[in-house]
Structures are given as C-alpha cells and as structure tokens.
Length: 519
Image (cartoon, rainbow, N blue to C red; front, side, top):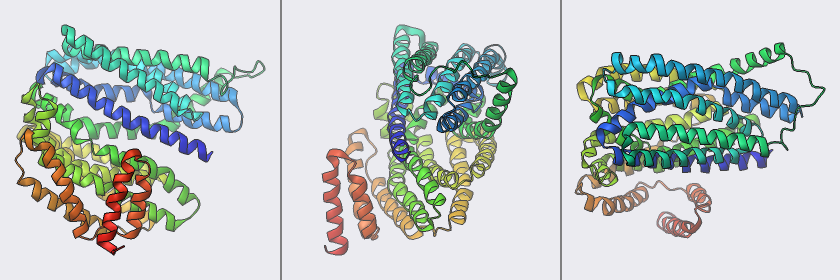
C-alpha cells in the first residue's frame, strides 16, 4: 500500500506540474494569436466553463475513487464496477442537463442581460458542448484513481491537453478566432473520452473483470448506491465551486463592468501571477498524506516538524518569486507577449496578484494540513466565506480601479482566508509557528525587492536583473542567518532529486555551511 501511495502521488505530482505548464502554454499561445479583444472573449468563457464542468461532475469523481478503492480492498469487484456505471449514469445526465441549460438559457442571459456583450453568445454556447465530454472522462478518471492507476489519468489528460492545443491553434490560424479556440477545447475533451473508454475497456480488465453471472443488482440497490455517492459528493462540490470562484469571480465581475480588451489584459497577467503556486501546491500535495500518517500514528513531534518545514520551504521560494514578479511585471509581460505589446497594460494586475499569491500559497498548504488531520469541513467553510468576500470586494473595486481592483480584491480575499487557516493549523497540531524563519525570509525578500527597484524595467535588463536578484536574495538569507544545520540537511536531501542540478545545489549548500558554521 505504501508503495502504491508513493508511486501514485509522484505520478500525479509530476503530471500536475507538466499539465499546469501546458495550461499556461495554451493560454499564452491563445493570447498571442488572438489579441486582447478576442482573448478577452475567451477569458470571459473560461470561468463558466469551469463552473459548469464542476456542476455537471457533481463532485462524483472523488466519490468513485473512494468507493471503488473500498470495494476493491475487500474484493467486491462487482460492486466496484457498478459504482462506476451508476456514477457514470448520474454524470451523463448532469452533463447533458447542464450542457443544454448553458446553450439555451444561461449563455443568452449572460451575453445579453448580465454582460451586455452579444459577441460572447456563441463562445458561451460552445461551453455547453464541452460539458458532457468533460464529465464522462471525469468519471473514468475517478475509476482509475480508485485502483491506483494514476498513470491512466495522466494519459487521458495528455490526450486532452495536446488535442486542445493543436486543434485550437489550427482553428485560430485559419481565422476562426475565439470560436475556433473553443472548438479546439471540445475536440480535446472528446478525444480524451475516447482514450478513457479505450483504457477502461482494454486495460482495466485485470483490475475489474466482467460482472459475475450470479451477481444481483436491483434498481433499488442502484438507487441506494446513487444516494450514497451523491451524499459523499455534496461537500466535495461545494468546496470545488467555492475554490473555482476564488480564482474566477474577478473575471466574471469584470465582464459586467469592463471591456473585452481589459478582460484580455487581466487574463494575460493572471496565469503568470499563479506560477509560484506550482511550488506551494506541490508541497501541499506532499504534506497532506504525510500529516495524515503522522496524525494517525499520534506522532506529534513528526507532525509538527512536517508543518513547520512545509511553511518554511514553501515561503523560502514563493515569497521571492512573488516579489520578483511584482517588481518585473512590465518587462515580463513585454517578453512573454512580444507580438502584442498592448498586454503590458496588465502589469498593475500582475504586480498586485503576485503578492496575493503569497497568501494563497500559505492557504493551500494550511488547507492540506487541516484535511490531513481529518478536518476537511474547516477549509470548505473558509473557502465559501472567501468566495463571498471576493465577490463583494470585486463588485466594489472593479468599477473604481478596473483590472487592478479585481487583482486587489482577490489578494485581500486570499489574505483573509489565510489568517483563519493558519490559526486552525497551529491550534489543531499544537505547532509553534516558525516565526523567526518566516521573518528572515521576508526581510531577505525585502532586501532583494529594494535592490530590484533600482534595476531598469526593460526587456534588456530582465534576465540579468533576475539573476542578480537571486544572488542578492541568497546572500541576504546568509546575512540574516536563515540557514540552520537541519535546514541545510533537508535542502541537501531535497536537492538529490534535482538530477544534474544536484551538484550545483550541493556546492551552494557547502558554501553556506562554511560561512555559517565554519565547516
């Protein structure tokens, strides 16, 4: 079981990093090819695409994974198979229902009444076509997760993402603009469904053989199983919708008050600001099972060590990255969107959002710890409250400050979510906050930020400036005496996974040891 967990977690972790980068690549590519106005139309459809996909899935993929795993553990393979089929029926119904609802009811209302932008009608209607395909593949991914075949999830996501990027790019290049980009998404998900069905039919037989001839499963049994699945999925879907709104509600509100160009500028800056989350989400993914295991074993010392290290190592990298993005917002946008220099107008939003992502990084790690020690409802309540606060702040600030107001509202909401989450982590785990280490990271980052302030904010100086800031930050950490012997050993152990970079990291750590401890 331990090997399954480690192997599965590693596969999903690597897959998440790769596909997050792929998602950024898709958005960068679309932004360059479409231009601010058309990309703004695409940007306004993305939140509704995510929301309707989540509603249609009904929170069932995690339920499938849970109950399939449980039935497999006691060798009830017939029940595992019927769990998949029952959930699939529910999800197909929900996918078709919400798809039709989006095409004929929600999209017209959004385009004409809420947004007042008729050009968004057809793109929003295409979102309704994406929904059924996305929920079907979600059901199969839940089945793959239930039997610990995480690589199958990665395969279907690879087909989905590659298909989406290739078809969207081709359709945009032949002149179909935003509509073409969305049709590429439809085809990407449909290909993913084909891949999932193929894998399930030809590669899952050894985990889930054909149903036994003497197995009875009545309509009443199916309804009872459906009720069990839905009951489990309710808090899951509430949490998923709330988290999605935290990310996207600013874009939804901007659609009401701002132009497509403004939305395009914000949509171009948003994925860049979230780059530091790759580190924090990776650590959060690791800390959840680790904290869960330590809590189950009642090893309080180990649990406290995990919590303290998770915050320290995450902030060690995330804080300077966020400060650097804020300081170099304009040249970063100018280089990434070199074909459309107009996107530099999103620099203010990028600078503010980057700081907000520091708060969200801490929140993500805190959430994983709380979930790991058996309190999943606490983050759910905080997320729901955060979504409400985000909506209120955006509705107030966007008309006044434009896209910078949306970024500020999101950042404030992230701060307000972070504070109670940290409180519950330290209260429930009885861990002393690593205050000294965090303050030293902040001081070193401020020193780096002051240095960066005097570097010219031009494309020519961007990469030399980033390199110089890294050096300044490194020596600032030494100056404030951040590194302790256990930190160096922990970082040395972590660096062993960096491949060819391990030797360079080790040399740096040896250098730090000599300066700090005279070894």
